[in-house]
Image (cartoon, rainbow over all chains, first blue to last red; front, side, top):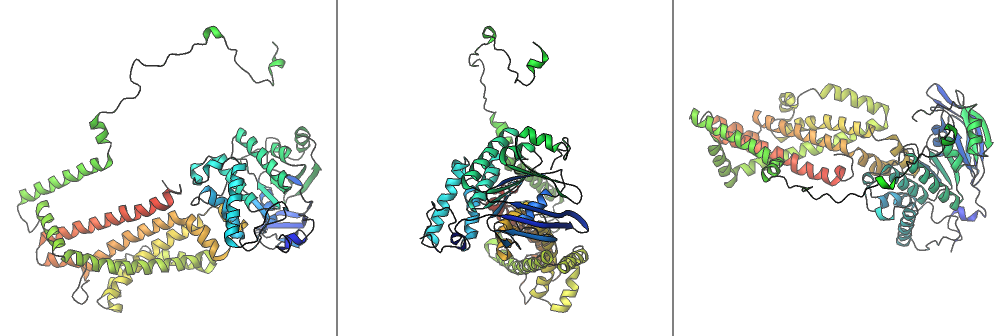
Length: 272
Length: 296
């Protein structure tokens, strides 16, 4: 039943492998990113740090295929990226939920759009409905409900986003991102608008859910605590135009902060 | 205790049981008190506004009686009886129908043109320049000033009316819709594209609903402009093939010195404007942008 469903199932071991090769980006005449090369292995969790305005978010948008690089090559699983990439899902600083849709409908958005494109994916334990539309719609619905349960919002599925708190909205955004069955989850300062308690709770959720699914994680942040909690590798951007000034495996938060001292000013915690 | 041992430990105040009193519930006086009936009544919006209207009517009626000249200033009673008479014998309803039919044609054409222009403007540089130049030129031009020209081109009839109506709706509508599209948050656009939306489905599922508050306000402004323009245009001429709308009704009755009917027509103009704005548009807003938390 699984066989022949999609191109993804035919690859025996899915290898979400991200390769940036000499990526450059210019905003008008102003160079932002300069020949930036980065390799990320499947399931790796990478924190991208750097001062405000250095081009961290732009880098993430390039990886998602939302912004075209001015030069260089970007490949995901060996395929060159030329437009929005299915499977590379972004979570933004603000939840970016559709205000006119209920919480459940927001989470259902990706599956509605994926419709024909990418049915049941690599998780062999997942039952794929062989039937067309209605079966798939039911499955999408139950999966959306399950995801909302996992982020602790099972009782708010019919609410409109504006009735939720900022933290709850960001949880809906997380559930929506996971509903798109991503291989790469791109987080763009997803916790910066939250208070510290909420931030820690959501961080734990992201970590648990991403680990369960073996997702490749790229998180852009100016808060070393985010990176320490979520990532196993840190990439520091710096300079103008920006390049990678440091790339190392994380030992501990204290170690990270000590290493960052050289690259990012510690009081450089401006509002993003 | 030294400073060092305090640092790094959360400070918890010591609890001294001898000072830890449990308070008895407060029952000496009512905590909640019902406001006096008059105060609650005065909080009703409709009542306060209603009282203002009643006061105005009293002043009007008093002035009319003191003036004692129905040709110049008919009183409230006379106006109402003319209004009821006009409604009962069907003449006013017929006039309103004629006006609204013409209005809707001009309104719909104007909206469609505005959407086309806005679509062009969001997708091409040329469209943007076109929109900004055209609106800069024509938005300040009162529609009624085009009427002589319209009469020359389209003759006496609904064609000229529709022409000036389109002019009155198109520019404010296009400006508002364009501003609405421009104002869609970048994150929402990116989220839409990130989930694979593009082309028309991106416009319909993301841009239009996200810009709906601005589009709605464009529709409201367009409606208000169109209604004023129509009544004014009908006053100038408006009887095509012997059938005129509400403005023509007012003009005709002024010529025949039925001043009470003139007043009745004016009252109806106000009432219809209010009903469309406060019932039709308000309901639409309540069902959409308010329910979505996009407007208060």
